Amino acid sequence: MSISDYRRKRDLAKSGEPRGSSGSSGKNPIFVIQKHDASTLHYDFRLEVNGVLKSWAVPKGPSTDPSEKRLAIETEDHPLEYAEFEGTIPKEEYGGGTVLIWDRGTYENITRKDGDRRPMDEALASGHALFRLKGEKLAGGYALQRIDDDKGHWLLVKMDDDEADARRNPVSTEPESVVSGRTLEEIADGKKDSS
Image 1 (cartoon, rainbow, N blue to C red):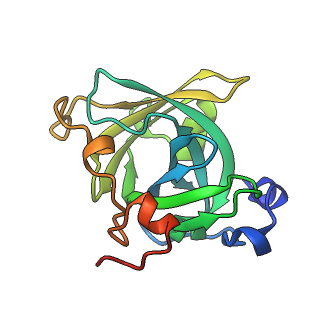
Image 2: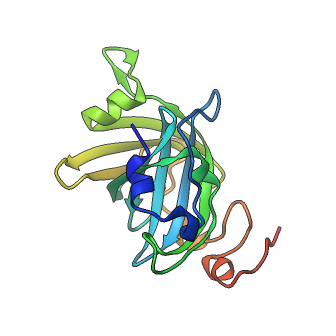
Image 3: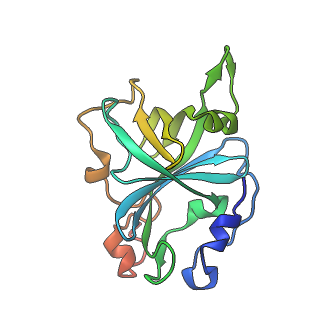
């Protein structure tokens, strides 16, 4: 896993995004979900795996309803420092648009094979990973299931557990950043932290 594709696609001096390096965030791996208003509005779902953020673009955003399967399109690995990035990438740059930290926290790998926990990199390589999120907006079990290897298409699905809630729609009812309290529009307009 490498962030060379990430660096190759960007002029980091112009985009303002972190250059980053591979490393570890600590004992518990992190996750981050960034709302990204680029050519289309989507949510970037990222899991720390082996010192980088494995990344998927989720057009409709994550759900708390186990009956909803959300398309997740695999993208290039990002550096861990990207989990702190919130701001506006110039329109002419790759991924140009506004980025908001919609949710963040840690996660626990709960993928098992033959009764033993399967490492997350192996689980993703096999196309099926289970994990428990401990975020500010999302919690509980989720699954990532690859459905088309050639296109990098996966499904992100909420597990049916105590944190599942078919009535809740956090994508539409909780639009603000968990870091700054700002909306995409406020970030784009340069408004300072509302916290």
